[in-house]
Image 1 (cartoon, rainbow, N blue to C red):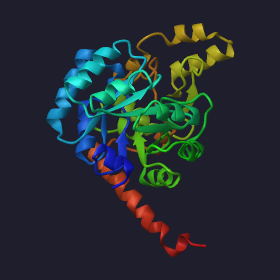
Image 2: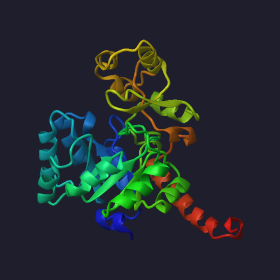
Image 3: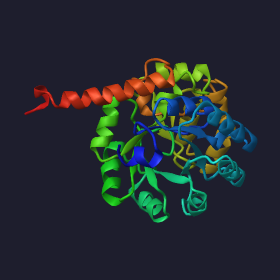
Image 4: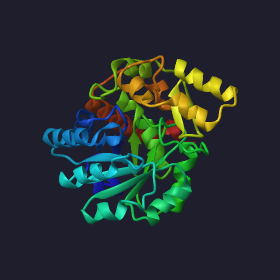
Length: 316
């Protein structure tokens, strides 16, 4: 056991990210049943939909699972009511000030984790009383920092600055990547993109195939004036680039983005006009697999990589 497996009461220090439009109860329960921590992504759900997913997840697994709670969500109070009502054991908060709800959630016996992209915000999250932080590097598909700090640099800097458990995210999708993050000081890893391309993911099949087809250089971090996000370079992305070349204002960029772009792309499968959010690790994702097989493969590679490091060929 380590600090995260003990905190969450899970077998492996591997967390599936709570991704909008991609991570419902089927994916969360599958990952939890496989020994990791599954997360329901509530940011794309109406309150009644989240309650339905929580009920179904509890029926599908007797293992711990979590809900990701973006703090910009307009009906966040209703989501919190659902979480407390159904005794969801763990909440991952993101995109907001952790001081707002951490104490209230903890009063109800809920473990709270906050997602950050910098040392400063990791320290603020610790000061707010969260139980752990997810530090997400520039390589990730979402929650990216404007400073573009890579995971390789961010994790050891955050580790140096905080005392609570640290979960690494961004650019991790393999057992070797997991080992690298743990070596840098993480207690666990959070993986998003790899689980988008899972059978249980609620992403549209068109989007899953696009992720599988992605290569190095297929994505780009953009829209930093609104909220930094990494997108696959489709026609919508090209329109964003043209808007930048035309020196469009943040208001014009918001107008171009409009409403429902992520749903159109990731959930409805519009590969032309949709917003296709995914991490750089997509270049290493080559097939859609069951979530349990993804967990099994990552853990097996993690363990074999440790063994390989102990062989003579790595010594000098």
